Structure formats: structure tokens, C-alpha cells
Length: 93
Image (cartoon, rainbow, N blue to C red):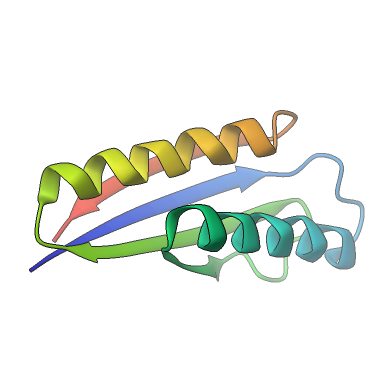
């Protein structure tokens, strides 16, 4: 069994309140869950209104597949939020 972890750090310039940020993050989390069947959670910067840290996790038997799946998820985040600065880091455990 292998675990793939994608850490995403985002700057959301259009969010002018925690409510706006949380709406954007919630839409992104729902999209990723539906499209990639992964577990998603906001894990850092919960109280900052223009920054978010998201953890995306998938479990499987093929580490190559997990890495490809998480790379596609990162590309999807960048497409879904083109105005945001996005940094992602993948780890296989």
C-alpha cells in the first residue's frame, strides 16, 4: 500500500474576507473530491483571508499512478483558480 500526499499552498488575491476565501476553498475541495476521488482538507492558514494550505491524499497500490493522479489534481487546481498563485509539493509515503 502506498499513500500519495499533495500539499498545496495558495494565495487567493480576490478574497477580501474569510467568508470569500472559504467559499473558494470549499468549491475547490468539492471539485477535487468529485473529479479525482481523493481526500481533501484545509490544513493551514485557516484564519488568513488570502492564503490557504490544502492537503490532498490518495491511497493505492501503484506509486506511479498516485503521482500522476496528484499531478493532474495540481494542474486542475491551477486551472480552476487561474488568478491565484499556487505552489504544490507531492510526497509518496
